[in-house]
Length: 203
Image (tube, rainbow, N blue to C red; front, side, top):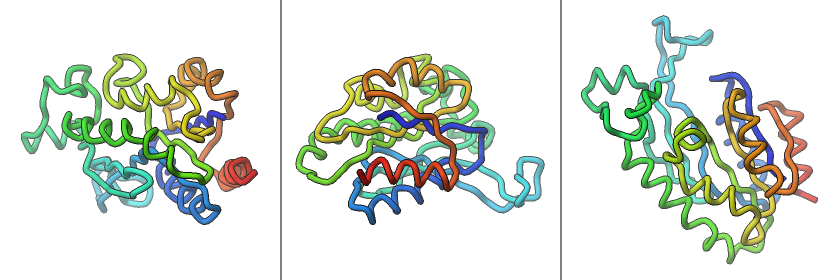
């Protein structure tokens, strides 16, 4: 089953996914892949949300080991501190986030090891990809190992996947991967949909 987690930006999809992974671990379900939580700071600028926090970066949590690595900075911040690279994968297409190519390589290295690692894990498993965006879907770059895993379909006893994507790209993800994964379901970061995923994986 392909679960497509979508919704507006900055509504807590990655935080919801972190909680879901914790809940699944208590049900003896292992999550493999990557979660991309935002890095937030208190702020009184126009960029702050209703709670007074501003998103300045993105981390990657590499599952199942829960190793956290820095992944992206907001492009305007990267330009201001001199770390923006025009010829990087993100820079060449003008993303709003500057993603260091070495961070992309680290995430891809982790993703490329998942199939082999999962072979020895007898528990129920969920492949988590947070998230697919323009780099992957329009330019065949970024998390290319995630695209390979999704194209290959269920493997090593991993029969289900959950992919995070912007609403505008959800149809693309569905058309590319739903048949390979035996169907799909679009979900939102709600309590009801968390329970739905947990029930499916606990069967």
